[in-house]
Amino acid sequence: MKGFKKRLNDEILTKLSVRRAVIYLLGLFILALGVSFSVKSRLGVSPVNSIPYTVSILTGIEQGLCTSVIFTLLIFLQLLISPRTFSPFAFLQIICSFVFGWFVTLSNLAISFIPEPEEYWLRLVFTAVGVLLVAVGVFLYVGADLLMLPGEGVMTAMSQRTKLSFPACKMIFDCSMVAGAVILSLAFTGTLLGVREGTVIAAIGVGLVMKPIAGFFKVRLQKLLDK
Image 1 (cartoon, rainbow, N blue to C red):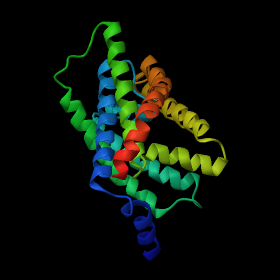
Image 2 (cartoon, rainbow, N blue to C red):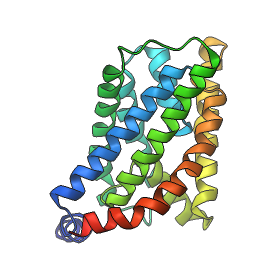
Image 3 (cartoon, helix red, strand yellow):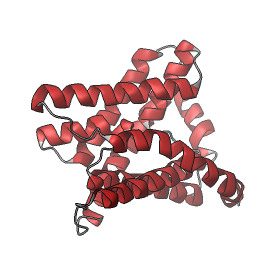
């Protein structure tokens, strides 16, 4: 317990500040808003959110709650993948999972007044807005450098266990999440739920959009955090 408290102090408390926490939470909310726009487009959600969304549709359970529960399960997956490097500190990701899930619920409510687009080009616009918001959200919450979401935790554990690069593990993880969503939706409905061309656009587009954002704002964000 003492060792855990010391590591917690070293990894979180020593760098925690109101400004850093606000940026982190803002990033999570913008990320959740991006997920909501992807759902509204009806062209598919991002890979990491594909299983939570599919389970939500199949069970009728609210999407935010499904996201929280499934993200929490990903924490235990980290333990299974790399038990030797797993730290009790990682269980703090449970907090992130439920905060993010609540933000998904809130953001779905926030844009509920916007009608679902019917024209295909407009649905693509919603997808593009979702990709932009996800990229901005990831940039902010990762830049705040507090706690990773469980998806990134799984990718990190895979990288540590297999010695593969993080991008390679991200590709494996994303494909696995999409495959899981496809299997679930086909098994229970015979159709695809939440996995369409928008999923591919998100998988490719978020990284492409985040690169120029990081290039332009990274130094500015770091200066803001260091104040």
